[in-house]
Length: 618
Image (cartoon, rainbow, N blue to C red):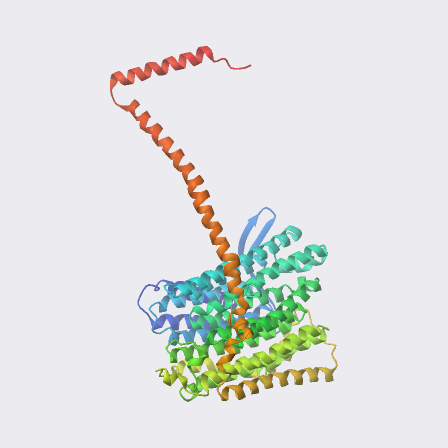
């Protein structure tokens, strides 16, 4: 089984490195096919490992000694267990579809080869993150996905907004990663190891205050990677990158890493339920906060991005309340229908010459039936309608909140479910149905290439059937994760399910009813609430005016008054003095014999004077 582990792990980086050799050459379709094949091989290996682990086996390998310094010893080791293998299969499956899709999507891009090199490196970094058997290896993968996201979000670097968005994502994540590093330092300082098995075995022996700080610092890292408030603004701006990148970031890599960290460190968070409650509370807030912004946004990709942010909130609620397997279950099902939504959005963008304003579309169903059907399936799954996957995973999170006695959290998620259903079908109605606004604007939409549609089919099937694996998923993952016990009466659980389904169906019905008749009046844009939501609660403006501008002004002040006036002038003065002394001393080396004899005599006199008058102290 070790061979399959190495294939699953290293196949993506082999594709990335070989493709990098052709990065500056003209586009080669074989590059896309080659990297897609290697990612698919990684997926097959992951599936074989899943079958092996399902037989209650764990694959744990030590590739080599990595860091040895004093008492610190960190091997380059990997583990395939019930948690990591679920992530491996999810990451490689979605990545395979994204790679195949990208062959068509990036077909006309001059940097086709470079794109696939970055994309495969992104997958490899995520595999390092989820397969490592220690926190340092996880952190290496953590930083790797951060670097690759920077390269892919800013892929079209000649476009200022893309470069700015890439830098924003990178810098904001570096701020959060400082918190994660503090958590790792605390773990090593108190336990002396960063191996998962050793840490989780000894964490119970630490003072609860130390464990609390470890949990807080690790969650700060997760907040940045999974874009939780207030470190959330980069996620919507990351839509500047190519759409396949958005699908990969939002479905299988990057933002799922934060949830994975909390699930993986469940042994720590079980000891600190107060921190878990804070995580859940923040998640519930983000679920509603992000959904509210999606209600009014007109940008096709940003609506889906806010949806991801909202669903991450649901995952953190489950993880914060100790239902780690449910958080992981929603992460997996969400990956299928969210990647399907993003890739469908990419088809729409290509059909509309990269137009993103959904108010400029309408009636695309007749020209793009397969894409419309696929995105509708994904939207139904996202809304949590039976029998699609979202119903099983998302409703389970609401049950957890109610079962835990966190009724306010349950109500927030309940409201969020209705909002999710509404904005999902607001998008579907404005893009695919209603008046054909695009004709008035001169667009001539067309469907994507057949192989692109075929590539999306597995995601659509999984968005439909994945929920039915809930019981087997529960039995599989709780072999490793702490089991969550439900104490709800069966009748109450059914009432909760019916209530959540009713609010979701109501949201869909209201969206269909309203936008079938042209939507809301433009006067709504004058409302204060609308302006608040469309401007993202003015948080980006607050960051710009309250942090960026003062920091820029302060930096400019230091540059002009400290760097230029003091540091530079001091360095210039020292350099000038040395240069001036050298200019004067140069006369000693004139080459004139008489002059050099005079200098020799003067030197002898000075030495004699020192010998006569200088008396060392005894």
